Length: 309
Image (cartoon, rainbow, N blue to C red; front, side):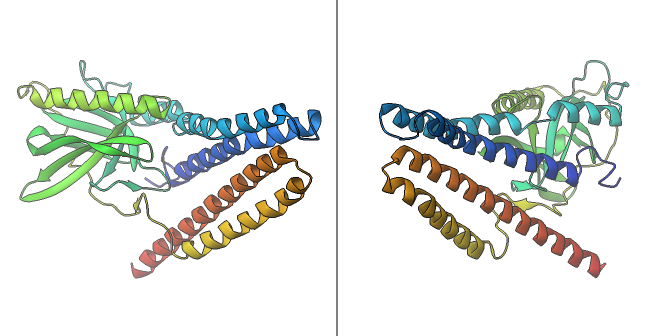
C-alpha cells in the first residue's frame, strides 16, 4: 500500500505535526499580542498598576495556554483517524470475534523511542487479546504475537509527554525483539496517559490468565521489526547548531531593538510584552528551520537509499 492510500501516512503525520506546532506558537504568542493591544488602547502611557497586572497575566497565560493547547491538539483528529482506519480494515464487519474487544492504539517497532515524520507512532490500528495471542490490525501492518513469544511487558518513561508500553518478545531461535504501544482511546494527552495505563493493566491481567485455546487467532505473521525512517526523539539534523546560534542571536538583537525605545520612555510593561512576543516569534523561526533541516536530511537519506537500489 502506498503512502497516499494510507490513513496515517507520512503526509498526514506531517500535516498534524505542523498544525500542532502552529497552534502551540499561537497559544504562546497570543497573550503578549493581546496584552500589547490592551495597553495601546486603554493605557498607552504604560504607568500604574493595571499595565503591570496585564503584563503579569500575559506572562502566566503564555505557558499555561501553550500547555493546554498542546495537551488538546496533540491528538487532534484522533476520532476521525480511528473511524477511517476502522472503515478501511473492516473493524465493524466481524473482524474480531464476539467477546474480543479491540483497543485503538499507536504501534512502533523496536525498543528505542523514535519518531516517524514527527510522530512517535509508526502505525495506528486495533489491538486485541484474541485467545492466547495479541492480534493487531492496523493502517499499514497486521500481525499476531502468541503469548509464549512474549518475554516481558513493562511501562516506558514518558517521552514528549507520551507514556508507552514496551513489549519484549522473541521469534524462534532469535531474541531481543521489541515493540511499543500507546492507547489512543482518548482526546488529549492526559486521557491518553490514563488509557495507556489501563491498557497496561489489561495486558498484565491477560498474561496472568490461563492459556486459552477456544479462539484460535488468525496467523497474520509476527510484528515487523524494520526501523527504517525512524529517528531518535532527541536527534538534531546536521548544521542545526550553527543555525540555532544565528537565530538566537538575531532574536536577542531584535528584542533589544524593539524594547529599547519603550524602556527609554519608561513604558516597561510595553517593553516586557514586546520582548515576549519577539522571543515567541524567534522560537517559531527556530522550530520551523529545524523542521526544514530535518525533512531535507530525511529526503537526502531516502534519495541515497534509492540510488543504491
